[in-house]
Length: 152
Length: 152
DNA sequence: CAGCCGTACCGAAAATATTCAGATTATGGA
DNA sequence: TCCATAATCTGAATATTTTCGGTACGGCTG
Image (cartoon, rainbow over all chains, first blue to last red; front, side, top):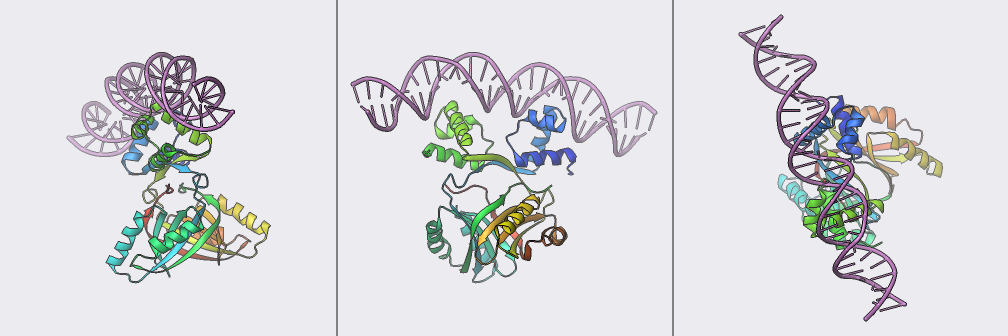
């Protein structure tokens, strides 16, 4: 299936604000409400739109520290990689986990209350995983830009 | 203002799925629809909920490559930092930009169609900024976990 | 070229959800 | 205890979402 210009516009709008009513969307796209509704439904059904979520103010909810941890594993066997991924996925502090090309194995984006909480997480949750060899962490001083919208 | 248990539950739910109706939420929280509505409205008004957005399937919309670029600047004066942040914020490929504590200055999360597109972006957009000294990029092999929800 | 199919579209009706206006019930001091 | 405040509820109004029947416009084929 191919997206036309209207679909792209629609996705662009919904990436910025998913709370727009079909009426507002229909106005932006010069289509009827029903047409817009049908398109959104289809984009969801076909998986272009995976979900819609609320974005919170992290400071307001007590998340004071974002850190990026580069993780080196002890081995790169299928099983070790799998097991590590499975364990890491369970940690709510780990918001993102990427396997990387290059010198280290994984990069994690970790959200904690503060440095103490990160320390505890590292010592008692992450570093104790048997697959982990070393962890190198960089801390975020400030978030200049933080988008969920992909360019399109 | 302090969040009570209901608020926290509510935020947790909306972080996972902001398309839930007030009716569905009221069922989960054992409150009336109006009570839930009032709470959501307040959480938005007070800025706990910044926005609600659609999360797309990046592969389906042609974003084949995610990369993390570590940027070293030529200087760390207020002006240089500011100018760099301002310019970078304009690039739609740069979804996130963090100023970092530690050895490098900024980390960018960059979304492009493929390696060619990244290359062009680097050469013609990023590396030509006068504030930039060097750029070191790591490429994502796979996204094991990708959450927008903060732990709470 | 006519007929047919599939797709996208529209307007209007039906089903849901949101919003609002009191009335009622906790909650937390004085 | 009593008051003031905030939170909640019910039920009605308003608005939005969803569905549905029908239309227009391709492309395809006999």
